[in-house]
Every structure is written in C-alpha cells, then in structure tokens.
Amino acid sequence: MQPSEKALVPFVSVDNMMRLVHHIGVERMITDIAAQIEADFKRWESFDKTPRIPAHSPHGVIELMPTSDGEAYGFKYVNGHPKNTSEGLQTVTAFGLLADVYTGYPTLLTEMTMLTALRTAATSALVGSYLAPKSASTMAMIGNGAQSEFQCLAFKAMCGIDTVRLYDTDAAATEKCAANLAGSGLSVVKCKSPEDAIEGAHIITTCTADKKNATILTDNLVGPGVHINAIGGDCPGKTELHRDILLRSEIFVEYPEQTRIEGEIQALEDDHPVTELWQVMTGQAEGRKDDRQITLFDSVGFAIEDFSALRYIQSAVRGTDYYEPLDMLADPDDPRDLYGMLMRAK
Ligand code: NAD
Image (cartoon, rainbow, N blue to C red):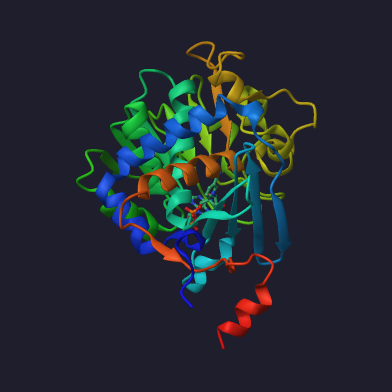
C-alpha cells in the first residue's frame, strides 16, 4: 500500500542541501539564516529552553538540542569528536527534525552538518554585527577546519571584513582554507603562528578542535578594542582561551545555563557577570560600550539557532525539488488499526 500524501515527511539530503546552497548562494543563505536567528532571539521568551543533553565518552560527545516555540518543535542531533579527523572522519556531523506541536507529527527531516556550519557562521557574524568595532576590516581565523570558510564568508557578508589571516597548527588545513577562499573577494593571508594571525586583526575567531583546556590565545596577544568570536570551546573540559583574557573581556553568551557548563566561562566563577545576546538584540542590554573594550562572544551553539535554521530550510524547500518525501510515519487510514495496516501489507 502506498502511504497517503499527508504522511510523507520532507527530507533534505546532503546532496539537496548543497544544491539549495548553490541555488541561493553561500553568503546570501548565511545572511538569511542570521535574519531568522535574530528574529527568533528577539522573541526569546516564547521558546522552551534547556541546556543541550550530552552523552560524553572518552571519544567525544553526542548531543541532543531540543526547543519549541509552542507551535513548532525542533531538535538537532550533533556530535563533537576532535579525534575523528585523524581517522578521515568529520569532527562534527548533524541532522535535525521539525515537528508540528499540535499533531506531534514530524514536518521536516534534514541533514544538518552543512546547515550547522551555515548557522554557526550566521550566528557568529550576527553577533559580530552587534559587537565588533564598526570599522573592522581584518579577521584572524585560528583553526582552519570544516567551519572556517563559512566563518570567513559570514563576516565578509555581514561585518564588512575584507581580509582574513589564517592560522592552524596543521599547515595543510590553512592551505585548504586559503584555496577554498580564492576568488571569494577576501584577501587571504596565510600565517605561521597565532601571533602572526592576530597582527592588525579587529576580530579574532578561534575555531579549533581539541578535547582539552587549550590556550589558543594568551592574554598578552589580545589588544584593546578587539572582538573575539570563540567558537571551539563548547564542551566541559574543552576551551580555547586563557582565563586572563576572560577577565579583561565583556562576555556575551547565548544561554547562560548552557554556556556556564560548556563555554569558556566554565573557567570562571558561577556568578561571573555575562550579557545575554537576546537582550542586546532587543535593546535591553548594551553591546560594545567603547572602542577600547574587548568583547567576547563565548559561543557554544544553542538550540534556538538550529530551530531558526530548520524553519528557514522548511520554507526554502517548500514548492521546490530540493527535498524527497520520506515514508517515516505509519499513518494508517484508521488511526487505531496499526496491526490491520501491517497485515494488509503482507
Ligand atoms: P575541524 O576538526 O574540521 O577543524 C578544527 C581545526 O582546528 C583543525 O584544522 C585543527 O588542526 C585545528 N587546531 C587544533 N588545535 C589547534 C590549535 N591549538 N591552534 C590552531 N589550530 C588548531 O573542526 P570544525 O568542524 O571546524 O569545528 C571546530 C570547532 O568548533 C570544534 O571544536 C567544534 O566542536 C566547534 N563548533 C562549535 C560550534 C558552535 O556553535 N559554537 C558549532 C560547530 C562547531
């Protein structure tokens, strides 16, 4: 028996996601997703919020990230396995789902590895548009792995960055990133050390992967007035910045309850003051106060960003062939006759 039309769930595969990104354009899509994230952060109070649910192992972490605005429910499944690249596998992979709160039926299933890179870059640049110095033109990009090109293009599209200074402990990653950014309109400088990378940078993005309390930047490297976009510290025991940098910075976070567990601020006391980004976006809290202040986005990635990205994809694929209908709900004609449906299928 063919499932009825209403029971089919739109599924966006990796192939279709890539077709969609090419159709829309990377920078345009990042900018559009950022607009959706900003709109959702501005209605922060309408969301159910909880720190994500991790399953830690010596190998990495697997996390579920749920939220709902009362009408739609969404979650992302995502892993973080820094050791994976040495085995030819990705550090981060993800997929996600949207459902209708009224029926509980799924309304979208999609790959989210590509989408996570886009939404992380969108969030970073959105936050940068509030906090980075307005005249910023140069960004240091430390950690040149899977997320890095997306980060660079997001800051180009949304914060006016024209130069990126790349550094990675693995020179091959820097070569890959530089090659991928050729022709993007960005000036790309390959650097041999973190010190070299942050030379003249107004924005410093750290996006490394190592399951330890790393010190990608030491305090003496960070001058006044910069904006730090710290992406890679997103798990207990996995951070990137020296504590002294945190003590000199005004720290901005997505959701404090999650960031205190996972972010750079796990190195600080539990009551260390932080500013919530949704409050900056709604005008309830101040962003950058002056041109000597160090602003720090202690990014860990929050479920509402994924919800925004899922909603964006749902509307972007509607009426297109960028998805396949997936038979993942039983949906018998008589809703109580599940067994009869099984027997009739024999
Ligand atoms: P990746 O493994 O593809 O790339 C990480 C890069 O960091 C590698 O090229 C590695 O050589 C480099 N690196 C490691 N230690 C370094 C050091 N000390 N100095 C300079 N470079 C170093 O990983 P990815 O997918 O690009 O993700 C990067 C990080 O961002 C991960 O830790 C991931 O968990 C995190 N992440 C955060 C968010 C968020 O929302 N905050 C979203 C996605 C990924």
